[in-house]
Image 1 (cartoon, rainbow, N blue to C red):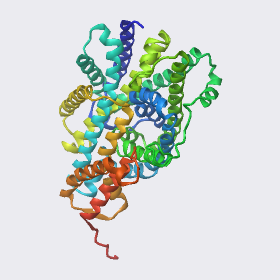
Image 2 (cartoon, rainbow, N blue to C red):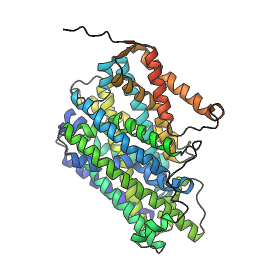
Image 3 (tube, one colour):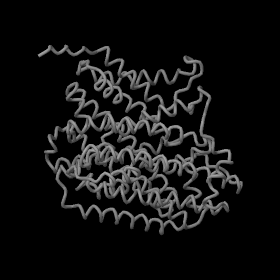
Amino acid sequence: MDPLFLAAIIAGYFLLLIGISHFHRGHSDNSSFFLAGRSSAWYVVAFGMIGSSISGVTFISVPGMVGKSGFHYLQMVMGYLAGYWVVSQLLLPLYYRRNLTSIYTYLGERFGVNSHRTGSVLFLISRSLGSSLRLYLVAMVLDAWILAPLGVPFWLTTIATICLIWLYTFQSGIRTIIWTDTLQTAFLLLAVVMSIALIGDSLNISWHDIPGRIGMSPYSEIWETDWRHPDYFLKMFVSGAFITIVMTGLDQDMMQKNLSCRSLPEAQKNMRWFSLVLVGVNLLFLMLGALLYMYCAQEQMSIPEKSDQLFPQLALNTFGPAVAIVFTIGLIAAAYSSADSALTALTTSFCVDILGFHDQKGSKQTRMWVHLGMSVLLAIQILVFRAYHHDALLKQLFSIAGYTYGPLLGLFAFGMFTRRMPRDSWVPVITLISPILCYIIDRNSISWLNGYAFGFELLVLNGGLTFGLLHLISLSFPKKQPS
């Protein structure tokens, strides 16, 4: 496929996003930037959140994972449903009741200023690393198959990637993103459905025969029953539930969209419908992965050493122009629908939690400088990741989440389910100690725990360690005297 033609498609796509941003340019105050004036329709938010949850990592890594682990990832997706129920029924009411702009304000109200800022810093680290990893994947694909053949260096691809996101988010923030994410989700779903249909056609399989053919393939195994295996179904289900709780319910990025809804019932309705649709979307990505490996087996093609490269390699070099165009649009839609909202959330958290913007009041100019600073941070981290990538990026992403979101899980759980008050000045230290202990246990678990290998449930261990350490440094509230 001609790289210049694909580059033109990408340019046209971003012009469309910038056009949407221009339409909302009149809404550039902090209230619109942070929460869209709390006027978003729940069904628009729900549809757009699909793209934010999928990201470019899922678009490429989930199909690539099928070769080694089949449909095991679906075990984790089932756990997502349980996690979204917890977010809807426990966390959303808490945030709406307190009328929060940043969800980490709760930690300040419950424990103190050190806990508040610690929660925000944990989010800033977690989300900036996660978003950089997602954007690195896209920059890597664009560089390898589209821009490098045109003589564009990787560093310039990275800077251009970040600049384009900044360009359509710096004015109206979440108000713009709710609509750009809706558009990008539509392109993402169209891309994956068309990819399945076109690749199925290459295999001479009709659309209605695809599920049956995949079911007879060696790639369709869902359940792993060996408790020592990292993909053991109970571990995957529990991990999926807790990953959802922390990466959605305790994440300013995902919650910022929910908090922009008109009311708590609408936000809960958004969460219920979004979670159900997301299961089906992930199933489509697994089906796509099975078809890719079936095609390689049929054509006796070698599998790339890095599984993340399988889908882009076949889409851009093998299946013809239709799949190449669909893949390119789907990839950038998946990547940018996640990254643009993350950049806005990073800016919001830094302004509210670190700089102390109160009730969405603060300098608009300061907010714009913070937004630019966060953009520069993402660009630097992407360039660092270029020298590190060696495994499936989805697993790297969840590994990062286990160490950085785990303390957040422990902090929020301790605040919600106990009446004890930890020493606020010690909380930052606890959130450093628990990941270190977690790392030591993970590295020695096979010898210490009779062959047990931690997977994504490392997150739960980290949260539990944080909870236990907080209990050790806390005092119980004095009992209220009867009036």
